[in-house]
Image 1 (tube, rainbow, N blue to C red):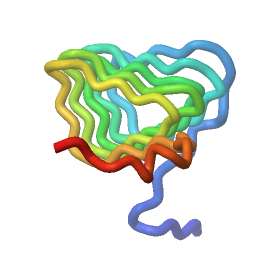
Image 2 (tube, rainbow, N blue to C red; image 1 turned 180 degrees about the horizontal axis):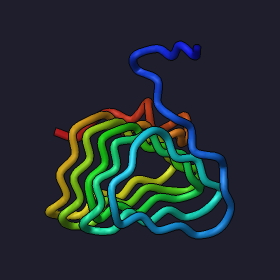
Image 3 (cartoon, rainbow, N blue to C red; image 1 turned 180 degrees about the vertical axis):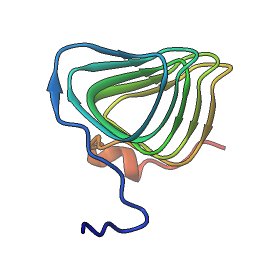
Length: 114
């Protein structure tokens, strides 16, 4: 008998190449590729990929090595983490954005213009 925690999500194997999602999915998704989530798609999963472009709905955290783009009509509930994040007009987002981009030292020391 196999016992799994109540919050267990199946893990999808890491894959290479470009992928497109247009249906429903759950668990977690890990790709070494560009992931396109099409307009009618609903994904309830944590996502890791080289880059992610969202036109549909995502419920979960999204992590990308290169960048994340939320297009008009996208709906995301979860945190975004990537060096580049683009949120288009008309996209809906609830969560936090973390961008691991080092800032030059003088940026933090400049006084704010009033």
